[in-house]
Image 1: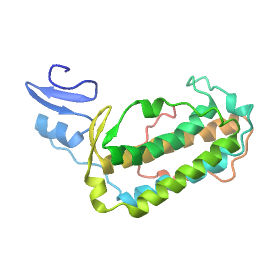
Image 2: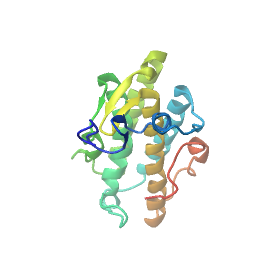
Image 3: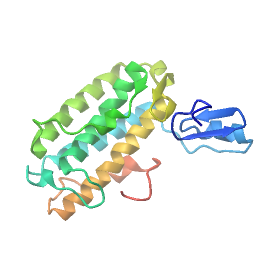
Length: 206
């Protein structure tokens, strides 16, 4: 696969013909099979859904104290603090990736900044991220979403990356609600299922 120009999965090769990255349409064309894509939401709808996910995360995270933020769930060796930070950082990573036409994997590996100690600290960071995203979406033209971004898992259209960002953040929001229940933290509102409806979320929670 490396010889054919695919540095890492996912990718499909048929002889010397190659499709790199998450590209079901390209895979189907390569293999000569019929493929019907799932419903695609508009960038405006995805932006609205992403903000609702982040708003919910911000309100929930603010209720965790510093001690609870040190909690490490058995399903994933990552503190609650790093998970909460990750929800906002991956979302901010979308606009950085489109602006720079590149998304390195290191964005998803960053840990919470040292000054983010309590849930309130991370929630305030989340407010800044939401403001940055709101400004970007308001100023973005239609051509922004047709750009190709070189991601660590292959080239992706910006609108496809936005969909991934939205369900990625939504998946972690689901996890945060489960952790809140375990730690006896009452969410300010129920999980916003309508914001997640129709997105390609995994069945498994972890």
